[in-house]
Each structure stands twice: as C-alpha cells, then as structure tokens.
Length: 283
Length: 262
Image (cartoon, rainbow over all chains, first blue to last red; front, side):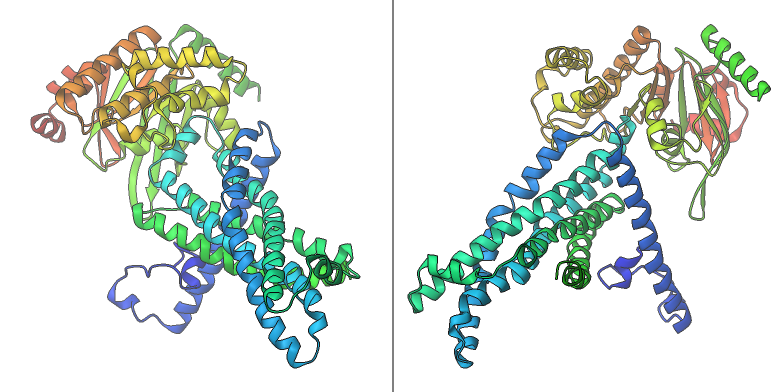
C-alpha cells in the first residue's frame, strides 16, 4: 500500500501481491495502511512540487521547451475543447429552453446560457477535456521516458529533469487553460445561440446584448482565469505520476490512468474551493 | 578546518600529478528494500585508466555506476570525484560534476522522439549554448563519425539496431568531452562482431582522450581487451582486483568458477 500511496487509496491502482495472511488484514492494519498511503502520496507530491518550483525559479530557463509544450497543450487541444464546448452549448440551450418555458421565463434564455457557459460549464468542461487529453499524454510520455531510463539519461547529461520536463509542462498547462476556456466558451455560446435560433428566431446581436446586459468583470473574468489553477493541478499531477513510475508497460498504463483520474478528481474538488473564493473575493 | 584544506590541497596536487584517483569509492553500502546490493565496496580509478567491473547478474555492478553518477544515493560510504565528495550534493551542484562525466546506459537510453543527430546534440544544446549552430552540428558530425554513425544522423533510434544505438549512446556520452566515462554493459546483447567493434572503439577513444573509465560487464573477453585492471564482484563486494593474470593465478573458488564459466 505505502508503495503506491494515494492512488491505491482511491482505488485506481492494482492491488499489491501479498502473502495469504495479508489478504484479510485486521481493520486497524487496513486503516493504518490507507492513512500511510494517503500521507505518503501527499508527502511525495509536496517534495516533487518543491523541486519543480526550485528548478523553475533558477536559470537556465527552458523557453524553447515551454514554447513546444504551449503548442502541445494549447493548439493540439483546441479542436477537442471547441467541440466539447459546442456540445455543451447545445445541451444547455435545449435544457434551458425547456425549463425556462415551464416557468414562463423564456426571455431569460440569453442570460441563462451566457452565465451557465462562462461561469460553470465552459471552465469545467475545458478542465476535464484537457485533463483527459493532456494529463494522460504527459503521464504516459514521462512514464515511458522513466521506464526506458531516458529521464536518467537527461539527469546524467547534467540537465535538471524537473526543469526541463516538469516545469515546462506545468507552465504550459497554467498558461493555456484560460485561453482554451475562452475557446470553449465562445464555441458553446455560438452553438447555444444557433440551437435556440433554429426553434425560435433570435438575432445574434440581440442574444449577445441581452445575454451580457449588466455583465461585470467580476462575473466573467475570475471563472475564466481560475482555470489556470486547473492547469496547475493537471500538469503537476501528470508530471508527478509520470516521473515516479516503476514497472514497465504496466507502470506506464498506471501512470496515464492515475494522471487522468486524479487530475480530474482534484480539479473538481479544487473548484469547490475556487467557487467560494471567487464569490468572496469578487462579489 | 585547516586540516581539511590541507588534505584538499594535497589531493589537488596529487591529482595534478596524475597520481590521485579521479573516482574513489570507499566502503559503499546500498540496500533496496530488504535486498543488500552493495556491501562495503571500495574501488578507485586513475586518469587514463580503465577499470572493468565484472560479476554475476544482480551483484550490483550497474548500481555502482548509478551511485557514482549520482542517480542513486548510497546508504553509507563515500564517493569522491576529483577529490570532491558527492554525497548530499544538491541536484544543480551534482550537475556541475556530471558535466565532466559521460554515461553509456545498458540499453543506450536514447531519446526516442529525437533523431540520432538530435540525441547527440542534446547535451551540447544545453551546456554549450555559446556554440554556434554550425559549430555544434560540426561537432556532432565529428562525434558520430568517431563511432561510425555519421550516415545515420537523421534516423530515429527505433530505426537502428541495438549495436548502433549503443554507438550513438557512446557519441552522446562523449559530447561534453568528459574526463570520466562510465559504460554499463557496452557489449551486452551484441553479436561478436559488433562487440569487437565496440571494444575497438572504446580502446581508440581511451588512447585519444585519456579518460578514466569504469566498464561494467560480464563479458570477460571484452573486459580483458579494454581494461587495465579488473575487479570481480560477488555478493556486493570485491572478491579480487588486479590485472587479468592476477585473476588467472587466484586460488579463490569463486574466481576460478567465474573464469571457467566465462
């Protein structure tokens, strides 16, 4: 248990092989094992984060690799994020029209769609899509490099792998998530309006002016820029899981799975805190 | 403190004379879980000298190399590179020492998303930033020519054989003109002709560059060809150390058995 840490605690890890008497451990032993795994995972993540932070803050900066990763995380995720945003726009449009009609509040449709997409669904769907695509990609790539000793080769070449591999990917995720969220929002608003206008004619100008009436910076900017925190979570967990991998192809698969599952889980949990934080700081 | 400075000064003087070991390992212990891999091993290598570390699989030969380059930390014992203890150094401090070392991994560990040329350029691009692109490319071509791989500069590692990958790994290890070369099983898994070619290449490089080399192998023929001294490991410790003739003359049962089976 302690060897795998939190990943085993949350049930996304393979069970360890053990002796017969370990198959039925005492409740105390089981709970202790869970607690050990939990704290060991967070402890290792803390050490890893510190190393990455220290590496990122000292020269030489790996700008070329950052640019490559910006392309990898940003440009290559754009079609997927835009498509997911488009689907969300249509779903909200269909649901909102039905619900608002029941309460005689059809005129609220543009505002409902704009706020639902920009404040809630756009950031969340972007985070989850990027966690799936980029998190799994980073986790698998670094894990594969780890098990084939390529990360050791980087270190043996007197290059800090935390700077070259982790800091660059995490920074790219932090910078790209808000931009991708804007893309998802735009695409969601366009398809939401389009779906509505197919049923009931509504000019785009009317939709926008009505949807954004009374809009403030506090209503839209913080939910968009909070996704930088999602980027930090996705990048950090994927790099951590990838660079601590052991055990060949199975280890690579495990790292990819853990990166996506834990990245998505922590992203949702972080949103609970972020939403409350935004409500308090940007009322 | 004064004593420490004196010792360091004496060591530097000895080093300048070429008498002090470039790599000195003293009473090194390393355990993985409950498995004791190294059990108080002590070795040293001087400038221009090649030491072959022999032994059965799992006796800690590769672990010894990983400890020397700092990829693993010893439980106890000391490792000195050019007289400087590396135990407890931070990653960036260790990187300064690693710039003087070249490491050939057992499976070459080439970066699979980069071409052969880019693999060799990689350390140069990070540590010789002052070099112009054309100078860097010339240097890479020269290194690849030394290992007979200049025609494959644009190939991907997956498109070349295991022996060719080791040659490229060797060129990459030599890119920063190291003073210490660590080779982990350079001929393992290769046919006799490729093994012979790698041995010749290592000998040629040693003659030209006067590096201190540690070669981990269980290929006795290769060890005899390229090494000045041999050290035979068993159960995490050195059973015998000396020239090949010393091993042949030994009465130690394990040494006799190893030579007989090899």
